[in-house]
Image (cartoon, rainbow, N blue to C red; front, side, top):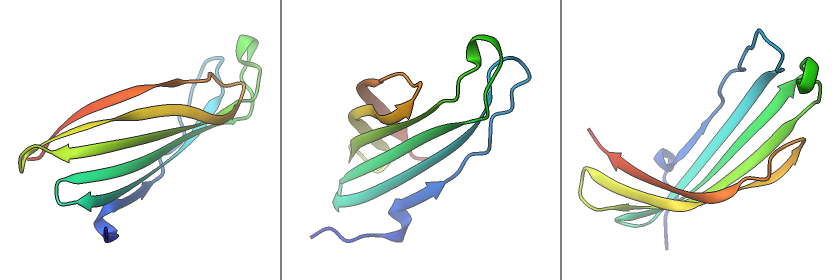
Length: 110
């Protein structure tokens, strides 16, 4: 049975992106949760959320928001090298692209 380790939970919030042209400013909120289910394998869920801070100008004069979810697994090849693979997709949004795809990663621990 996997044990939940507080070190595997990593919530964070990024500040807004300020723009000086036509697109609206954005607020972002990203949350990551990882759970080591075996000594060398971790499953992770990552939620990426973007919210418009009002409306922009010109062709950007629409409110928008989108919520993407990533589900991945990471396997420790060695003590320093980990590979990661998974899928992602847009789960909700307003005036948002419907993104779907795969993701891969290579981690190197210093």
